[in-house]
Amino acid sequence: MLIGIIGEDPYDTDSIKNILSNNYDKEIFFKPILREVRGSHLLSKKTKKLFDIEIQKKKYDLIIFSVDLDDLEHNTKKLENIKKEVKNILVNINDYILLIHIFELECLILADIESFNKIFNSTIHFSANPMFKERPKEFLQEKTSKLRKKFAVDNNPDIFEKLDFNALKKNCKYFKTFISELDDKIIRLKNNN
Image (cartoon, rainbow, N blue to C red; front, side):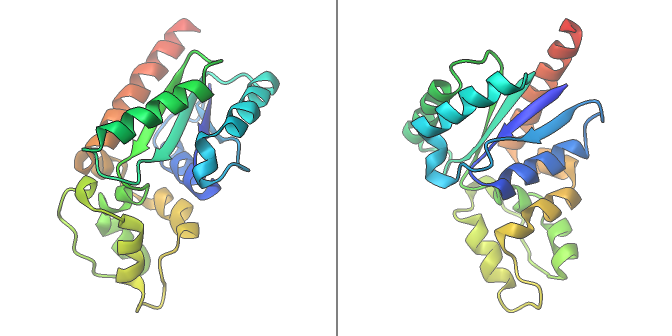
């Protein structure tokens, strides 16, 4: 089974690939695609053109579209706008899952701060709901700024390889919902083959 991952940055898509690949059957291959698309260009006509070319070259069973909300969950107008834009980009496929990170991808790191602390030899305490933390990336950068090893987004793929999948599901509601939807779609795809 081939599942494509589209995101705002190759570090983001590699991070999602790493956490999922470590927790799903090896017969499910997660492949980051459209690596040349960055940041705000993700929700653009260019992305739609590149995506349409990509799906002509390769058959994906499912697409994961990963995007940062850059806001808290209560901004339903922004949330609905992202859903609409993604639907317009992925109009030529039947099956996709939208993974909208509440604020940023780094919210998931806060959901398993113990693993992060082991990696960075830090003592960051974070027990709040990670979905309520504005600017989690900047929070992690600030908290490691005086450490020998400092957090940067290019660390994300390695960090995500070491995060506790169950801790992410337990501590981050949007990730738990995403995984539930992914599991349902994988089961349906397996049953159809």
